[in-house]
Length: 462
Image 1 (tube, rainbow, N blue to C red):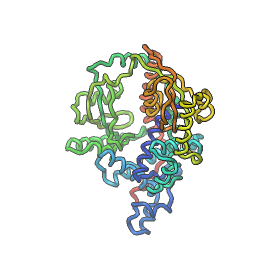
Image 2 (cartoon, rainbow, N blue to C red):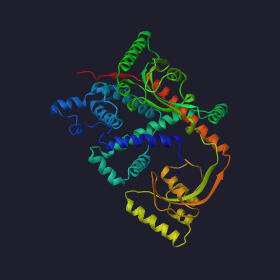
Image 3 (cartoon, rainbow, N blue to C red):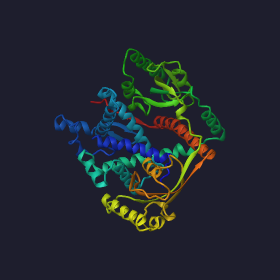
Image 4 (tube, rainbow, N blue to C red):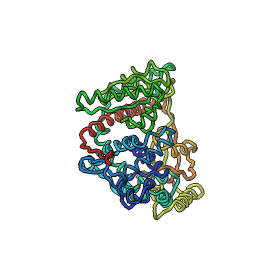
């Protein structure tokens, strides 16, 4: 099925970022192994001292430990990410504390998933790893060899994938599945979209969040406030915002310099909007307080928002079918391509029925319908598939198309233009509202989960 759900997009984003880090020689060790410590670049000191350092416990999360070995690997991932984004590197001890806090949150989620029965089977992991290899233009065998060449064991990588899918499923159950969008909210959103005019603005805002636990005493709250004011003073003296965000922010976008991306005024929390609407790009506003903690906000940019509104005009639909084959240990990529080329010749030159061959050969669930996917709107499928589909004439069969799902032959059956796609517009708007609510509620849920988690810190112990 090529239709993209919110969960599928979330998993794709998480896995894409993870494999980028892995291929940059920055593995995230989900299960530390003492035998790998000697090979780690961090083991530059005397062998005995390195072993003691890498194996020690740096945190206890409920009844599990996080070791120095795990932390060092995750810190390498963070360093690579900061380097790719050209963000100034914070001091090593600050970075380790920042990364450790994110590991604690991940560990708390995985523990909750285990306790509540969230499981990811091997078949799902294998399929996800196969898609990652496809997205990187490699066969599974070449991808595995590349990982191991870069010092990442294939089993460790698979467990990282399993963990990320597990956390995505937990989020789907605990947060996304409970989100509702009322008809009133939908009507207001559509009215807002219809009113987007040339003068409407979008804001690019970055934040540094210093989190305050729900049960924090007054003196603890004031200590966090004082720390926020101290950071604000550093920024006014010329300190780099992205570096301080990477060093101290508790927000999920901290390692991206704190940037929240472009948002209309309606998509910004009112306290954020009040803090930045009077600023010029590049300026930093005063410290603001929310239920989650203290925020320092920087206006990165301001622009016209009209181009970002939801489309409400005529929309072209395409009725399409396909044959899908996937690479596996038994059918490497050259064999998959040979089979699809043969099937295309049988259709184009031999006159055989596309639908019948799809029933016999396609590995997609649509094979039972002769490969038919029905009427597709723009954005319903992945870009590689959509681009190939849009270039075809009615009845024409594509050349071999590679997508994250595998290799396809595509045939367009019909096209039509929907002049007033009201229902489609409402569906798109409802999804946009769900996405907005999902991120806000997910961050609130993570904060509550973190507050309930028992943590002991041992990072600073000699």
